[in-house]
Image (cartoon, rainbow, N blue to C red):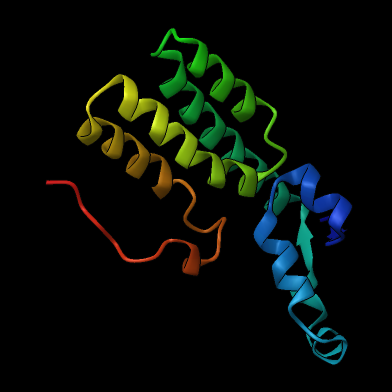
Length: 134
């Protein structure tokens, strides 16, 4: 199994912003003690790339339902997002777009469905408290 060294140039290409914080948050002595924590296998990279692709597709599916100039702009930003972190922050733009074109409850349900796709790709601290739409 081929190993990939976790360097910033690899992070952007496979779309894993959380891995950058994993490797950069450790001191050099910690890295010496745990070298396996700073590398990903090609299988891991392919899995993550597939998950990022799925998130992008789900976000674009929501945008495609809305034939407006604003939807084209948000869709373009989703298409050209560099990594999972860019997609994470585009959720707010998508929520604004969806709630302006549909009702807010329906928009929130779609965003919550997309947000669940990010679990395991973003740090748990990014998810905040759980809220449910009733």
